[in-house]
Image (tube, rainbow, N blue to C red; front, side, top):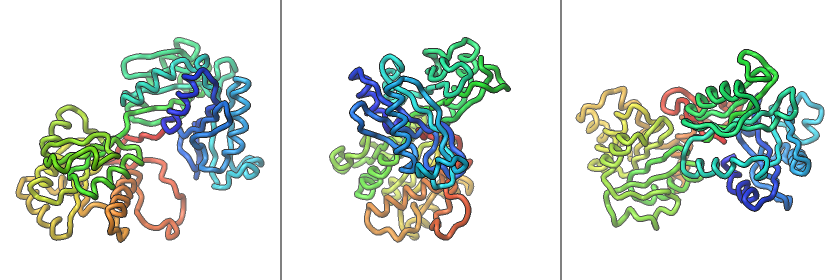
Length: 386
């Protein structure tokens, strides 16, 4: 929902009703992951996507009808359905899409949820997508780490879903949970989609150079909150890094240590050291590689710079295990030359390590295209989809 939130809230605040279609479950080679959403506005305009183009037309029609009637529905599109190819789902996957009407009457909590997401506060929205009692379908529970709002229709269901939703929120994972009609565990009848909105991951870029500007743009495009940090005030200016959320003038190692002490670094954080100057990058990497929780640490430089850097880090007492966490020279071998091409190679490496990709052309591989689960290690349990 994050990708369509601005449009959805705009319609909501204007007092209108939108049709909201959300991918809640996928099987096999589905084009979009749970949480992907599409909004149909009252004027017929569309934002977002639920299938990358495969079933958009059919979902558009359903969302338009649901916005008119106010009756939510759970639709499945897949190769086992004779209508699947008719609507264009030819990728071989199956997707379940929940379609609902969103207005101030049907979703009064939306404004507060949008505020949480904008402020990077974790929040989960649990929605009943299937139930023997049709009146319960579409009921919501808003779960925060320390508070709960609204209700799914019974105290028992609220308690069970709250507990499970907080567990998913800690993992940053969105999925469908199954219970008995009244929230009984180890039973079925009620399905609840828990959409988790964990704070967007951070990308810390050290070195206020042209490569950093290109990387900040790529990082922001991928949904990271980008900070560019450099000790040289003349270079570290917001005007040079418009895509960065924050530009900091400080010594990289000092800023990074302070962020770690403040609890602002976690398993989803990406650290890219682009200074390739030992007086900046070696102290920063000493801090980064000793952090107990960090998603990715990479450093730019030539082979000679890399060898010199590794020698300096070993002299500083870093172990082979700690040095093994360093991606250096940073990026994948794409033959990149310009700052923009180099930025693509860096984020390609980050994506590959996050999802366990090998970086080879898909045309050379067999089997499934999509990697559904994140790899253990640096990016363990930090999915921020939706």
